[in-house]
Amino acid sequence: MAQELRSMKALSAIRRSHWLALGLSEEDLAKPKIAVVNSSSELAVCFAHLDGVAKVVKEAIRAAGGIPFEVRTTAPSDFITGANRAGSYILAARDLVTNDIEAQVEAAMLDGMVCLTSCDKTPPGHLMAAGRLDIPTLLVIGGYQASGMVEGDHVDIEDLFVGSVGTLFGKPGKHSVEEMVPQAIRGPGVCAGMATANTMHCVVEALGMALPGSAPVRANSEKMFDAARASGARIVEMVREGLTPRRILTEAAFRNAIGTVLAVSGSINAIKHLQATSVEAEAGVDVFALWAELSQTIPTLSAVRPNGDVRIEQFEDAGGAQAILKQLGDLIDPEALTCTGRTLAENLAGYAVADPEIIRPVDTPISAGPSIAIIKGSLAPESAVVKLGIRDGSRPEAFDGPAVVYEDSQLAIRHLTAGRIPKGLVLVLRGQGVKGGPAMGGGASIVLFAIYAAGLARDVAFVTDSQLSGLCLKGLTIAEVAPEAAAGGPIGKVRDGDRIIVDVDARRLDLDVSAEELARRPGPASAYPIPAPGWLGQYRRSVQPMSTGAVLGRDD
Image 1 (cartoon, rainbow, N blue to C red):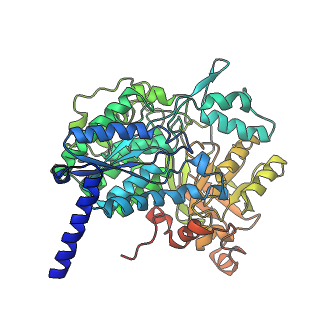
Image 2: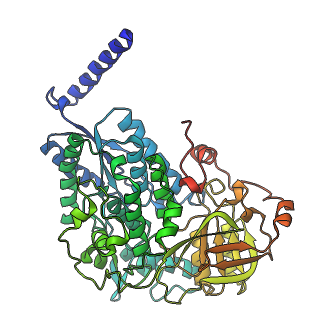
């Protein structure tokens, strides 16, 4: 023991020497030491502005009596780091973010952290790290990108995405892709619309892990910088108060976050990210079960694109996540503790929704719920997810037809392009799950847009063990089927011509093949049709099932 104490003192002296050499004083070393976690990157516009945000946060921490240390993590952007390996790096990078933070913040024994959160996988990566490390943590929302106009029409990344796929079928839409390219993104930040990034930004606030009124927000706006300054000051107070994430990330917080996603018909990716956060925080919350419960009562209160015509700017101006939480009232849990040190109810006391037409009260909703449903059945014994959006009858909610099976998304797209997929079929894309993809790569989102561009959105159902982009809301699509094909799930034994029945009202996804026949059938010829070298191979070997939110395995 004496030798161990001497070693600790020696290391402490060396740490002091390092930090003094950085320009800190002995007085500084007694102050709260705060990590400013920055994913700044010149690769993607999502993160291009975060150095400026970090500067503001660090100044505020110093002014509040703390010492900031800026650290960097990987910066996954769907449209940039999704270019190779069929997009497999996107979800796999979420866990790299979490581990990057542990390897720097936990290892250096810092007292708290402020995470600058931006594109899709950084918010869950930051939440997972907060839950794992359990040191005082705040997330600062990096904001969404500006978009432009073409011939008087507002165009953003969704329009460009739809137009790009439509061009494959000779249906580019009203404006050409070349016209939209310079206008769809007009500045830094995440995709406009209620896709995964803005959904997760709202989730962060609903969980109580960002200051009230933080999400969504225009990137580089004064409102965004005001929140950054306030967060820098607040994190020092949180360290002194000992307010840690596991006190905030309770079942009540998850209830509020799930209610928010349902009320805005957000990205289905939020489900696995919330489950992963629960696992890392050791909160013991079964997000899938809680989602099924809340989907019975939570209506849709706002119709932000791609769900409707409301733009994200209008949603922000109407009050954003704060207004959604206010309108939900007792349908969620207003007694949940938040990062302010107060309850959600206390934060919302006296708050008024700016535009109750954009963000409706629960007694006059856009549509009855659920906007997103968890379904099960013989084809999905554990779970599957279907996004319904605004339930106005424009999309089918039941389907019964023979399967046509693919393990190659590009082949499916070629067949759709060639008109070889007739009406009435259930297109099954498998081998694309967290192990098979790996990391749910494989291009399922492009297949879905191809179905839409081919004019089959109402006439073909789509079933996959992959995830989908938050921009996807086309036709009847059942995603994240679990167990996945690579883990021995029934989806791996489906054959062309097998009857598949989808019934959203009954929450069922069934394969009309007897259990005896299914047991006799071999699984896929290759469990892993997509090769995964390097980090992706490590991910494939370590990733756990969807019931964990696809966290990586741990020895403890």
